[in-house]
Length: 318
Image (cartoon, rainbow, N blue to C red):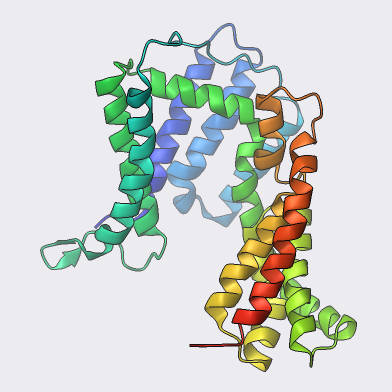
């Protein structure tokens, strides 16, 4: 039976390869600190489930210390290994399109595949079919790259190294912020939000509750940088007790549109560095916050639209 550990192991092996490539590059500034950062990240994927809470906490603090002390600054990264124009366009697009196609097909098929009487995937994990299918898509695309582009075996690791060194510590933000959201939910922040909401808004008015939930999702996401971190807090504080509990709203509609409202906040904040600051760096924009400025009008319009949709749909079950 395949479990989540198998998918995590693939990611861990990739990060281990990145760490090794950096450590062996004598021209890389601060190579040992940078290699240690990605090596610890690899360890978290390969053995995090066996390290316990204390071990993972120490590992996370070590990652923060390495990033905060400049261990990832002035990264050189690998040079371009393939000259432009050496591959036809369709040879480039086939591997890229393979990943989403295999991921979509696999997420629909893999949950029903069995080995004898036992399921192929661990049925206790709801996210495993999607992650396993995505991993299969990446492996299939990698095989096609070797076949169509005649890539060298070291190129996937070197390309991953270049991307990770460009993104730097921001690559960890989604994982860390999602964990922070879970910590907030377990520590009772949702109940505190619910209490504050009951004091600030008329909780007997469904429109006011919907506005508070959608706008709260966007604002909390802007503060934390990740809608996945904001979702458990706002849903526990306003969504479940008021929209679902008091007004009997549809939880599926609430969750779907609530997440979309949170993503409106993602468009407006530098805390979502991997979305808003990294593209500016990759495109070498003079304005570091140019991406955010361009997205602000869209974020506002989408938030208004999501709020209207939530009010029209959440209280009308089929």
